[in-house]
Length: 233
Image (cartoon, rainbow, N blue to C red; front, side, top):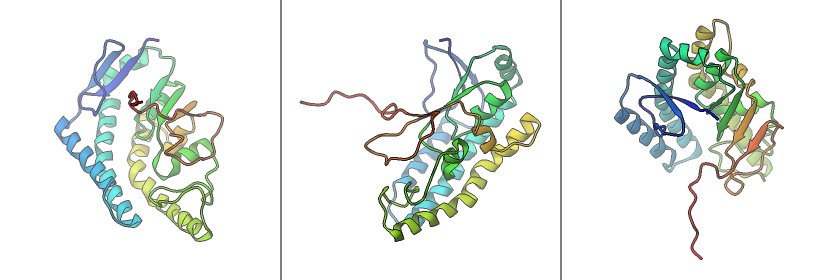
């Protein structure tokens, strides 16, 4: 396959390679800025504390981290030279990480089938977009420390944690909803765009993660994001 990788000039891992064509675009922040926010985000994730304390700390850290990706997406869609190249190249498909829905917006603009490569999406948008069953009596929510085998009161706790979705999605994805609507020149939501994903490559690990319902276009590829090491005898 001929692969074109589109990435900002400042990114965490994406670097040029002889295996693909690299198209980069300028962004208004430095590598040091991004690295500092990224480290702060993960330090917050692993801090001790109650479920509620950890949740609100992660929300605040996520807000700062999301601001970088929103800025990056805005500068991609406003880059007329790069957008013209993408429109004229007649690609067959787009592979993207839909947690930051910039590639999702781009796929809609280019009328391309999209393949999603993800671990999960905040506030259960992946379940809603795929119409996948997500019963709180069976599927543990984030930050609950619960398993897929719960007592009655644990199920109540799991259900209460669903209320976070009422505002978590708003602050995380409202900016992208407005950006997509302005760029596509019609009213759309991130959930509307996610529903158009052709294939969902879900990076579930069969040891780390609990079982969950899947839809036919969801393919678990556990271990794809792990380094391969030889085990001692």
